[in-house]
Image 1 (cartoon, rainbow, N blue to C red):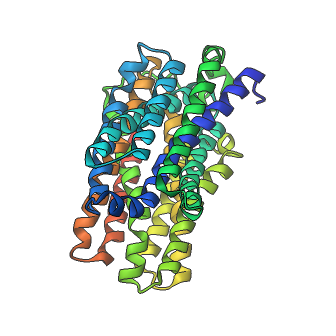
Image 2: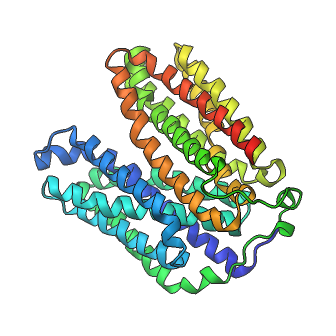
Length: 389
């Protein structure tokens, strides 16, 4: 269905916002090897900083339903964008450890709220195609962050210039949000009659505090834990446990992230025809097949195919489950559930990678098996959710 002009313009702005959301996520890891020697900080501080920021993101995600029930989406997204930009600027001017904790608060609060706000808005106002493309934009931003930081390093400008550029982009986007605040109230919500998949379903009546509501939170925690742990530990597993070269491991890891982003772009073209639940079911089992192959594969070709399958399988899970919320839950529960899902995702991001790290102290080769176990638990939870709603 063709979008009206104002709805299309707002969608472009939403895409830019989600792309911007991914910029800091990808850039910090590239900047850190340059940052900690210059600032005389311990190398392990990066993990602490990421954990603190993730906890702030979880808090803002869980509270976003309450916030968005009192403030319209446009102003919330604007405030979140300014907060995130401010956090990036604090990193650009960091002089010591306290600067990092000062930056963690606006980065975390801004990211968690805008993630929940934009997911909720797109779920209510746009199709599954646009939800998949929304999350592809995050992947593009997460890939662009390292490119920007690498460019600043090659040009001799340093990591501070990289963060300054990213912060400037986000402040520029905040100006765009100010100029387009009126658009947020002009796009009507998608109705049951406008969506054949919803028209064929029963009217959703589940409450946010139902079993399905909390199970959705658990599923998002499990999904993000599995995706992040796979990507974070892939290179270490392949180098230490399989004997790959760093270049080979980097290629396989890039294939994994590229498959997630490319998969979401491709899904946008047929998401409405296949439906969210079918795509999530297919994706879960494709990912499981990929992770099984990842557990047992011992050469570059097998590892590349395994991580390709895992990435393709992971691609529909987050956006399609987000887009399915208005079909499962009563209208007044939708934003609360989406906020909790975002918060649960942050808790998953903060937990399983650390658990995998503890496992790796004894056996790096065991890490993929931990991922597989959690992935199978996620698939079982999704099947239970489908029976409930």
